[in-house]
Image 1: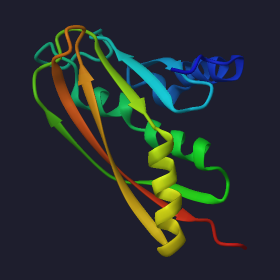
Image 2: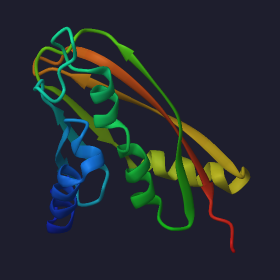
Image 3: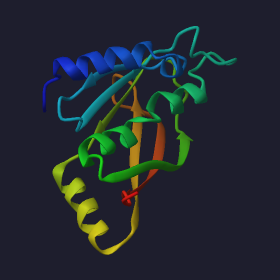
Image 4: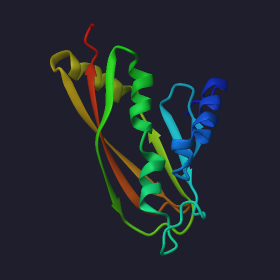
Amino acid sequence: MSDESVRTRLIRWGFNLWPCYRGTGGRVTFIARDWREVRVRLPLSWRTRNVVGTIFGGSLYGAVDPFYMIMLMRNLGPDYVVWDKAASIRFRKPGRSPLFASFHLDEAELAEIRRLLQDQPKVDRNYLVLLRDEQGAVHAEVEKVIHISLRQPS
């Protein structure tokens, strides 16, 4: 596991203050210096509670939405175009306590993307994000489809 750098700590603070992300109720708790790991905490609070007293589905999705796209952008660099293409969420259990999500990228995944783009103009990659409670029970699964292509010279 990589440590946080001063730069990624500042970015984490920025995320947590940024109105678009702050509105989800989620809190980024860790960003690795190499952007290969990010961790998020989503509490049950007055801001995230729905009409039946559990974590609102929009907060579940919003708290995990941007991270794989940003992590891929940071790791692949400016020669690549990275976009969220699709997403789906499956609610497994009502969230009645804080939930946690972890995002991980390894070198093998990055190498595979680079290899595929040598022969194809674009690739779509699927990533599964699990929102778990402190005991490890899965409350929601979010599948993200990320589009990646080589940047075309302008």
